[in-house]
Amino acid sequence: MPQDVYVREDRERGLFQVARTAFVSDDVLAQEQQRIFDRCWLYIGHESEIAKPGDFVNRILAGRNLILARNQAGAVNAFYNTCTHRGALVCREAKGNTKAFVCMYHGWVFSNDGALMDQPGKEAYCARLNEGGALNLARVERLESYQGFYFINFDRNAISLKNYLGNAKEFIDLVVDQAETGMEIIGGTQSYAIDANWKLLTENSIDGYHAAMTHATYMDYLANSGALARVGMAGGAHALDNGHAVIEYSSPWGRPIAQWVPTWGEAAKQDVADIKARLAARAGAEKAERMSSLNRNLLIFPNLVINDVMAITVRTFYPLSPDRMTVNAWALGPREENADMRQRRLFNFLEFLGPGGFATPDDVEALEMCQRGYRNLRAVAWNDISKGMVREKPGTNDELQMRAFWRHWNRLMTPAPMEAAAE
Ligand code: FES
Ligand SMILES: [Fe+2]
Image (cartoon, rainbow, N blue to C red):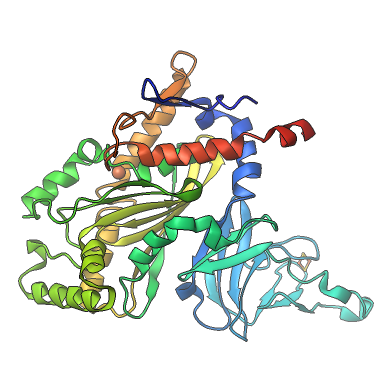
């Protein structure tokens, strides 16, 4: 497969283009499963969701049912959610706390560290049945964490999570280190589906260009509710290691850490100032200013987005087919946050990025319109992602960050010559 089938680049003409087949083809989706989802580190859950022994969450990643569970000794494991007897899911709850997973079909019992403990009619089985543990729950090949975020990898030979994250770690730190006593996932999950290719949401999550047009209603609302003029530091767009990317920018909206806006009332002013002063004492004045006055939309390749805007949203999404994806989103916040700030944060989580908020329905509409537009790909076969190609330092409204994603995506989707020969 030649290098330029999906992505073509002409630096002299400042052109960067992506083939629309990448958004509609079943074959591309099958290749993505093998070359991207089976090889990249995928976010599975946050340590706060499984804080106590016996806590578990049940998640679907790349079409596979998995369990992330803390055992009685406090160790965290990731298992394939399938009974080693005849296959049924052994865990059907989204989350909970248990010492054992009991299969609903014939009743095999697995401890929360995966060991087969018991089965009805045990006397009919040889005592050596589970010698070597082959009938224990199967472990996901790799499980590692960074700053409380747990990731799995289906590839036993993958590079370490730390190396994979590379210089994106700095931006994860800028989010997590806002907390004094650690971050936690707050409450439940926002789950919804979009009739569009999953990569459209990857692009959209780090796309500054669309905000003024697509989110005009929200910008009007902010202006009418006495929002701040754009203030603070300038930010920028960064292409990071391994296809990760980020935009950092100042904003007219409030941030619980720590930018006050008039709609929060005079009483909150001192609160915000105190939070910021404590942040400066911990992180130094310059870093504290960056953490508090800049928002950041961070993409961890291929499909984890951390939107540190007003609230902090942690979001993943997976394809069901080339033209449909499922989305899950969680709110992240500092454990020590007081009730008022927490309320503002959660209101923002709903108000802006929630599925019924100011931003997401408009974004969903835009992505679904793109997907429908691709039905005309016979006539128009390429998307343009050239904005800012001719600039020495592309800005947040340019498309450098999307090009970072696509270049890495293309590298993974294009087999090396040796590999191609073997196929
Ligand atoms: S399939 Fe689980 S006990 Fe039979
Ligand atoms: Fe948007």
